[in-house]
Length: 101
Image (cartoon, rainbow, N blue to C red):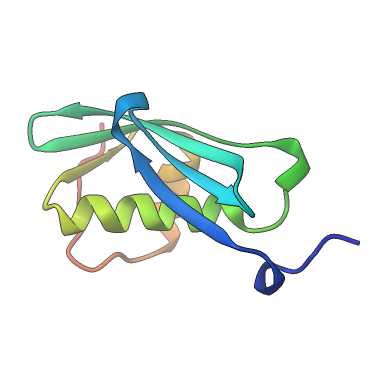
């Protein structure tokens, strides 16, 4: 049986050199959401979670952290990634400005 999220260390970091946010579980890379910068916009293009970590809510936690960080930096969020777009349809993020293309 897998450890519950409360039993694990889950962190999200922005890896600017790779143009993505990464989620780590107990230090292991579990997934990422890729982006590209466009002036005052951040365009989310792809989100992926390793099969070993599927079904644990990590994609949601990752996108929430990434979008919250972008909003805190006053960037316009452009969700080209289908997962990110669906997540934004279902959740509110304080201060987020969203541009649909």
